[in-house]
Length: 84
Image (cartoon, rainbow, N blue to C red; front, side):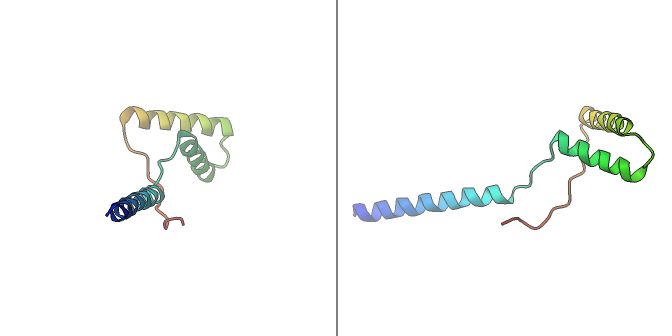
């Protein structure tokens, strides 16, 4: 009887552990401020080649600051296939 209880408990713990690992692998991460700044500067480079890097950085800082103050969500990156 004790062997059966131990087996059921072990299977339960194993199932919970598997579920926890599966949840971590499917959740998309939110971009950090640094990633958002890099993406913004890349967009600025493609739209206006003649703009200086300092001007691009200043423009992107202002844009990110406005987004934070207004509470508008940042554009989500496209979702790729789950990584294995």
